[in-house]
Length: 264
Ligand code: GLP
Image 1 (cartoon, rainbow, N blue to C red):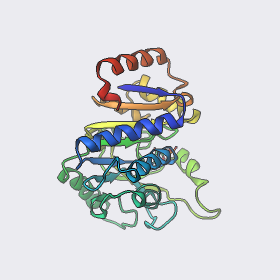
Image 2 (image 1 turned 180 degrees about the vertical axis):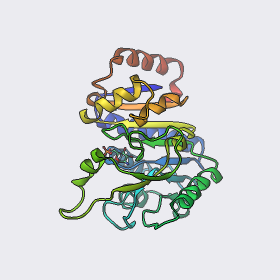
Image 3 (image 1 turned 135 degrees about the horizontal axis):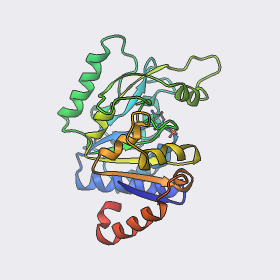
Image 4 (image 1 turned 90 degrees about the vertical axis):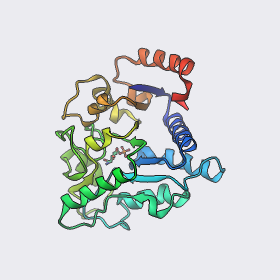
């Protein structure tokens, strides 16, 4: 695991954008696993700017989003589909046919639908670079605590903590979704490279448990310890509960010296 500590949000967004841009430059037909959430907004803004400046071309890129709320049509302002178009797709040149986001409007045959999402990932050659945020409870995608480390794309009931975190985004009186379709932890672990972004003190405990705690289904992101190529990009508040910060700084210095390509 590579833990990159940055002073603030902006440092994280820029570095994440550079890592994605260099992956796309190396392999123009890269398959990206994309995430939603406020943490991702600054990163998508940088990618949109780079595209406008002509330094990144998404014309051959294929994308698979991690998750979507069950019951929300793509036009709903809180749907992840709407988020992705608003913050990313409408600013760049990813081809519509290359965009995959779980369909929140399906009714019934969930297993069949989720299996078809998995098949589409496989048929596209798998995910090259998976972007992740993290929930306060350590979830990745919507893999709530107690999710199996071997889980695949499926219907997932949202935890109380997630429902509380999300309630503020919905109109008063509007019922927020209780379920989601999410890639599983097993699906995520098959990506060739994983990049997790976390900012703010509210994430500090989940981040520390994920990186330094035991691998446990109680903290879904701790399963990332099983993956050979994970980078955590953290700002100071999100990193504040890590006990090995000094060591991560030294690893970073040596990485810059010996394998700088890992950082850009
Ligand atoms: C939702 C998404 C996660 C995301 C999380 C964090 O729960 N399903 O994929 O990581 O939000 O969101 P934020 O970045 O707004 O804290």
